Amino acid sequence: MVSERERGKLRLRAMTCLAQAGIVLRQEEAEQMEVADFGLGEVETTGLEVVVYANNDRYCAKELVVLPGQTCPQHRHPTVEGRPGKQETFRCRWGEAYLYVPGDPTPNPSARPPSHRARHYTVWHEIILRPGNQYTLAPDTWHWFQGGPQGAIVSEFSSTSTDENDVFLDPEIRRV
Amino acid sequence: MVSERERGKLRLRAMTCLAQAGIVLRQEEAEQMEVADFGLGEVETTGLEVVVYANNDRYCAKELVVLPGQTCPQHRHPTVEGRPGKQETFRCRWGEAYLYVPGDPTPNPSARPPSHRARHYTVWHEIILRPGNQYTLAPDTWHWFQGGPQGAIVSEFSSTSTDENDVFLDPEIRRV
Image (tube, rainbow over all chains, first blue to last red; front, side):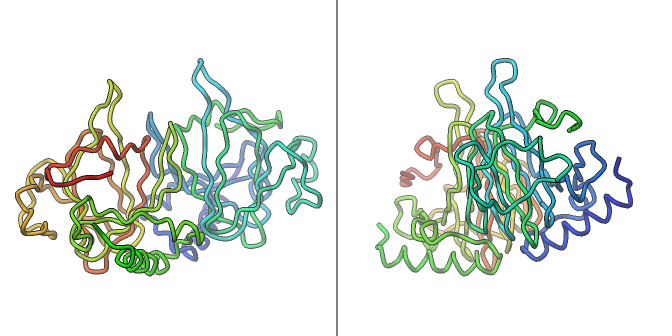
């Protein structure tokens, strides 16, 4: 588990990135920012900061913040009750992030997964996301990403988000 | 019609707003920015600059730029072939915009529609959008908006966008 104190610290670090990017949040959005630790209790290593702007039965929009070296672990959005899983477009706004998807493994990739969990990272085709770059993931595609030296802010545009349906490769992970 | 020269000028004005907001576009995105004149040929008065990040069968995300005093005219997104019209969330990133929707008319509204077309503006409940503010419009809701003194940048998150189905109150308007 992550303490409230630790969550507060990470929210503040994420806010400094957002402020550098010129992205404005209302006070209550900053206070309610999700600090996702994926149930591992090592949130600076495996974690993600999330601001949800909209999530309804038709679309979803979020701001994702990955701090330097912080990793959002490998997962996919499966078909649920016959409905295709979440499709998502990642657009980098600030900083640099390394996104990994199925395909030819990239030699000398920029990111390294947390070493004690490396066996749960199996897709190695690298997409480098810098401001203005974006990438759309088809539903049910394995992916993971990590913040670069300054971290990154990534806008996520997608179909409806249902985090409870996400499938992670690491069996210790609990998303919700 | 709007000349290519005029379009180029408006793209550049929109780019200066985007740059002030810290929003990064790739070169080809800047070059392909839509300058919508709604078929009226008076684009500084009735017009909108649009960058489409994603528009697929599940969701859509755009950056909208309204220049100072520029108006996106009153329209709605109707049901088409039994499918509910576009639902959209406007989130202001920079500047100030005045959005009008059905409801109690706001006394002394901040915007004035183009005077020679004022009869085509009938909803007067004002929502002021400043950075961090957002508003979600249900499908088929009449709405229009105008840029404030500096103009505004508004991120639009929505269901699939099909501009050709939009209904405008002003019969002279041609969207596509």
